[in-house]
Amino acid sequence: MSKKHHLCDIVDAEKCKGCTNCVKNCPTEAIRVRKGTALTIEERCINCGNCIRTCPYHAKIAITDPLDLRRLKEFKYTIALCSPVLYSQFHRVLPPGKILNAVKSLGFDDVFQESVGADSVTQAVKELLKSRELKKPVISSTCPAVVKLIQIRFPSLIDNIAPLLSPMEIAAKLAREQVSKHKNIPEDQIGIFMITPCTAKATAIKHPVGIDKSPIDGAISLIHLYGNILSAISTVSDDSGLAKASGQAIGWARSGGETIAVNAPNYLVADSLQNVISILEEAEMGHFQDVDYIECLVCHGGCVGGPLTIENPFIARIMTRKLVATLPDTISEKTLERVKKRYQEGYFHHDKPIEAQPVMPLNQDITKAIQLVGRAEEILRQLPGLDCCSCGSPSCRAQAEDISRGYASMTDCIFKLLETIQDSAQEMLDLLHKERRISSRGKEN
Image (tube, rainbow, N blue to C red; front, side, top):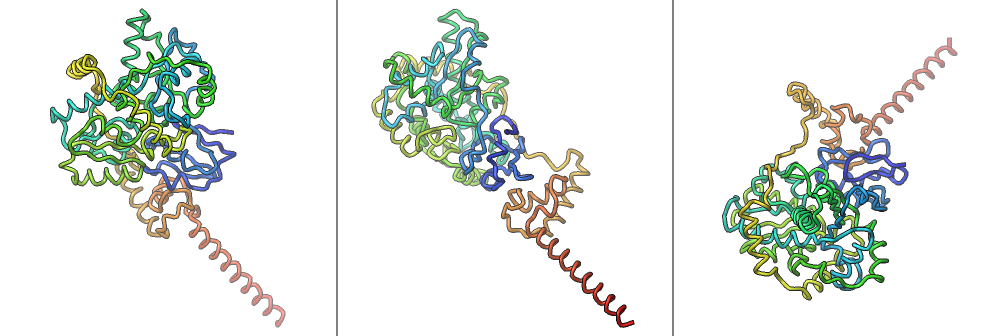
């Protein structure tokens, strides 16, 4: 039995033990455990997949398009958009053309590399930094979970985010235009599906930031499609014509790969959730005014550490590094000039500004919200302040707010429950002693 909570993940109620691992490891306090099952508060969730990664019972599962590829039938022509992470998942270095051809053989009409979009973003970021359009430090917009984290927890840094589409979005735009032009197929009859190692990308496709509609039609989990790809690899040839991205662009799969390609004079790289949060906290305090560019990725090791991958992220980094060493570093001069022209035309830019999405107040009515805050503070003073998560909330303050809104009770706190039991037991003992005294007096009379 499964219960869907929002776009990114579901909880298998039979597997969930209510252990609170996901509660403790959520960066935005988006998860609660109620009645023994984890629940997600959608407006707080950044879809980082940390809950999936840290759940020891595998009760959290990403929601992506069906493994049987039934959605391909909705379109006249279909394209698989492949993450560069895919090349690092096979224990040995294989030619990208062979892996791409294996994906194509699963039922797609064509394949396209997400890394082609990374080649374009590399040049777009260089132009952006030269123009000094943004205040320092410029923060990469590549990781959708980082962008969402900034929207929720660090809204003062929104103006620092590079106003550029992500590599997957740019690659999808380019793929759709090329196929439409060369195959004479209307763009709305072309279906593009991302083979994703990442829950955040799956959600960003349905709810994109900076644009009204994603150029991608769906996402298929890499971990679920992996077995099919592995089986197909032994039966297909190396089609080198399918692999058009540079080595530097494929290097974006690991942390630091983006900044190596961009070659910013002063930069910072942060991967894994806690490191990213630490860097953003420092940036919010204005400590990185001399830094030109910050690359942030919520997964350990970069995208190779995504929650929907197969290979150990440390091994995947090695595989990526070896593959990059065999490929041309950069794109051709002709392609570079085309990219620069598109940058000037605004091809890579967001269509609309990124908006802050702070956590909703306790109540939309400001008067009621103030009353609830006061009640939450009063409740908080009664709680032990240990932030042990035993109650199912991430902290005593969060529990106090949940109680004030009627989403939890005081006895959800194990310490308050123990106090209540002890008080009740003492009352029962006192009552028993009183009854015995009355009984004794009755016998004496």
